[in-house]
Amino acid sequence: MSEKYHIVSDGSCDLPPELARDKDITVVPFYVSFDEEHYQKEMVEIGVRDFYQRMVDNPKVYPKSSMPSSQDYMDAFLPFVKAGTPVICICITAKFSGSVQSAVNAREMLLEEYPDAEITVIDSTVNTVLQGIFVLEAARMRDSGAEYQETVRRLEEIKSTGRIFFTVGDMEYLKHGGRIGKVASVAGSVLGIRPIITLKQGEIFASGIGRSRRGTVYKNIDLLLNYLGEQDASAQDYSICVGYGYDREEAVKFRDDVAAALREKGHGDVPIELYQIGATIAVHTGPYPLGIGIVRKSL
Image (cartoon, rainbow, N blue to C red):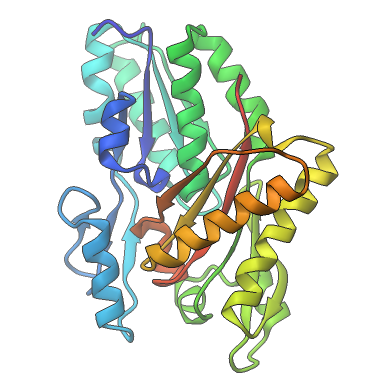
């Protein structure tokens, strides 16, 4: 292995497998189950499209996810440890999952046998497609020649800039997934209300409510523009993506509208990637999440 150090992430990062391979990123999958008994590795034993189709076809079945085990992480780390290649492992926010603790436990067990191993585990404080673009920033630093500790330091600096602005199809999956928290206090039990949600620093916050899909979806563009205004920053300094669930066509239109809104506000032409939200988060959002992820660029 000739790389200076290797990037590992858990499956919450929702990077397409071919992109992860192209960028030389190892992804440790989460598990998903539709019956709470038989669990499958996401992207390995069940594809994300098949997962969404099962949700759409079985709207009264609420799937569950399970984090990678310490053994899963040990299996991912070991080839690089044996080769003397340092590892940076980036995990979903600890406030949503114990994945980061599994990675820390794996690191500690490997250090007993390989005391010179270099493994840094980072709680990204983010998740899903935002975690994906954060992981890509790590790979970008590595591939640009940044040293190991420099990349770790910079990742710790920029992770607090990460935001997701999103909405869901309805509240039911949030209720079943136990992620409703502060969102419930705003939306309550009013029939047909859809929440507008912000994720920052590892937690979700209610950012408004609406009745129409279009109204809640496009409020996310306002949240993005407001955030950039608060930071007095150019969108050119950020990595931005749109994350979607089952409906890719809706997401493509939304991405075009996000790009147009940024141009209108003087940010110029900003590249916006389109990534499908995976099972790890979709068990909480249902099949129709749609939103924007943004994090400051590492370079």
